[in-house]
Length: 583
Image 1 (cartoon, one colour):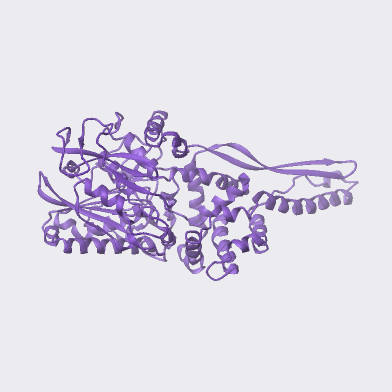
Image 2 (image 1 turned 30 degrees about the vertical axis):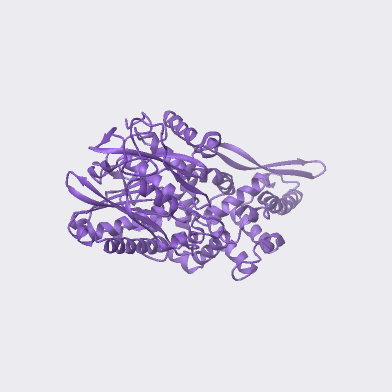
């Protein structure tokens, strides 16, 4: 497949706001290592989580370690009850790393159409951390639906300096949720993002039912429950909104909330926040070169509750917050700071350690090629003949965040939130997401049927033919008045030209019709949905060059939306895994 074909593939994936690139099928299992390469920490064995070797402590509590297996990799983790001696509003690198490990392990374990082992890895991990009374949503063991959601919950008793507490861990499923992708593009006309809000309402209901079923309702009423929430991507957005609901419900009872979301989309609204609540115990880890935290659009009023924490910046201050680069949010550090070469080296060391010879697949992308449509025209002034060629060439470098931000800004300003729903774009996106994640059809299959370069050549050929004819006619008509001759300025296809050509191409493309043979509503509906969704996004670009840059870049950009990569980023700031600490 040509680079151009592959680029338009990922372009369509991007404009459909596929905010959960982590939702891919993967296998997981859990292992407790007899020995792990760590710095003198407590090791759990395979038979009893309470069998521990006395070693280093954190805030007066033992540090445990273990290993879980995910995507064929063995990932070591470290946990301590000392997490809950810290102040929730203070960002803690150890809690952040462990929260990301929980999110990574939360993937549904699936064998074909058998979901019976769905929550196995996350439940095993919670168990070996000493959590009991484990619960997993029924949705974990069922085929996902467009609006389902799943979480894993466990609890343990921890003796803290503030007394004995019940710690309740809540991890929202963060990958391999198939049809749930449809919910990610469900924003609604007002209030919180509809898909994430409905998911958070469901998880909050399950948490409260868990408290009731495990006789902790009174503990919560008396301020003796600690909530610990985690999630990545869609799971992160749901955890963010769930944490907000638990704060609203329990903060005045002195129950503590520790929430760490990783690369979460924006699903909250400032109008939903209560003035008598403090949401700064919600920490949102953000890589500014990851596209997912940029949606839903800031221009539509969306935000993340709590505090953004930018992973490139090696300094942070939870006591002196500032406006985030996502202007509806606050942050504990400056999101404009770039990543240092030293930090990138540390990250690659962590990735190498876990992934071995597959490491390069997980390395971050921090620089992209800017693309330019290059037109070359040769003419003969004596015989009035002309020849031309069209190519896509590199035109310098750009950071991923600039490409992402440009696209999302245009996405939010080109159309209103109400129009997004009323025009049918939301419904089209839901159907398209459901189809792609249930019919065995990949975006590559669609793009194999589309050739962006050939389409542009066709557009240019028609434009140049007309232009050359008009150009020479004007010269002939003004042969004796050279001052009236036209300036040689051949046209370049613009965004609207491309949209018109692609619409005609899709409607007449038999390969596209074959791909969408089983689409809900038929092939014609599929083509309409593809046009409605994809070309809304394309219209937001200012030029063909911007479209080409985004199309060629999005595949690389989405490499930065990786739970494993996030685990490794966080490990570089966690001295339980490396000597690198906050400067």
